[in-house]
Amino acid sequence: MDAIFQKNQHYQKQFNKTTVLVAPTWSMASLFENGIDELSDVLEKTDWRIIIRPHPEFLKRRSSLRKHWKIA
Image 1: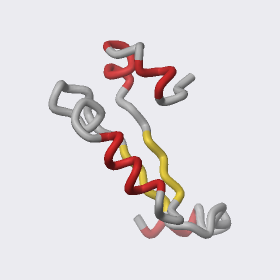
Image 2: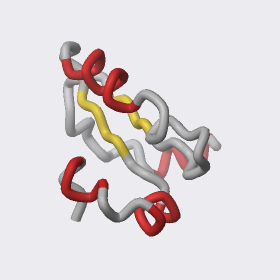
Image 3: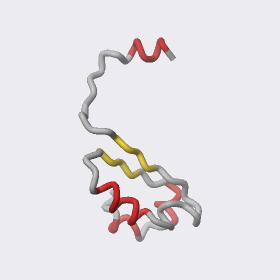
Image 4: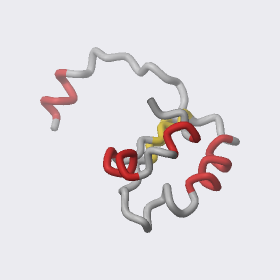
């Protein structure tokens, strides 16, 4: 781990904000099926950088949500 850190130490931090990655699974019990709108409403009010990354299988099975979430 120390070797990896040393090797990449020259990279500068690109963002001065806390970054939160939301990457839920794709089952029917996933966050995208149950509560992602509420979570995004809460996170939107923070000054954090939010990355929401849906599971590829979720996108395949629920392609109708691509427009709602502006997913390419």
